[in-house]
Amino acid sequence: GIQVEQSPPDLILQEGANSTLRCNFSDSVNNLQWFHQNPWGQLINLFYIPSGTKQNGRLSATTVATERYSLLYISSSQTTDSGVYFCAAGLTGGGNKLTFGTGTQLKVEL
Amino acid sequence: DGGITQSPKYLFRKEGQNVTLSCEQNLNHDAMYWYRQDPGQGLRLIYYSQIVNDFQKGDIAEGYSVSREKKESFPLTVTSAQKNPTAFYLCASSQRGGRSYEQYFGPGTRLTVT
Image (cartoon, rainbow over all chains, first blue to last red; front, side):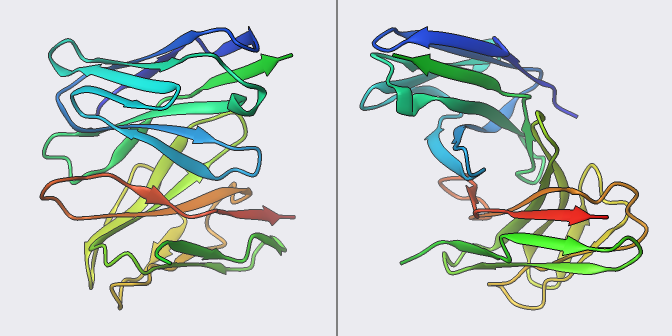
């Protein structure tokens, strides 16, 4: 099956700093999603981005499908951005099963 | 107000008992999924269903069973054969294809077995 790797595993930022989270995947995908898991465990959909670039406020994401990676950019970070960020990929022709990475634990400090 | 509901939020059971977790969606999605999350880990797929009365095993199906009798509902039974049932269980749904494969998740059920 598809392999999904995220980096870095942990990240500590000062409020106002920018960051880039990376997701590498091992095969051709028709689904690539970024999620933020809040302290209660709820997965919040950030981006559905099997290819291209999208922006939503302070967050943006880029997927380069031909090179098998995706990036999540967080600008002007806030303490509310803290939590775990997951990347998940679905293999083309794989029945839309998502394979998750192990996540990036982000802590934003004052 | 469309979404996915899971109940209960917390569930406690004694070892050896079967337990059923509920998942309901009103998004009119054909496909539904069950994932398991262990502390500090990503999610792993247990079972998925692309259409009513049909479902397939995911990566870690042993010790679990599902049914899909209605489009809106996809209950998961954790049987006594599951060796490490204590975990956080998340249900998701998506369209079956077309313009988007985006999955949406419910709030989850935390199961503790002692």
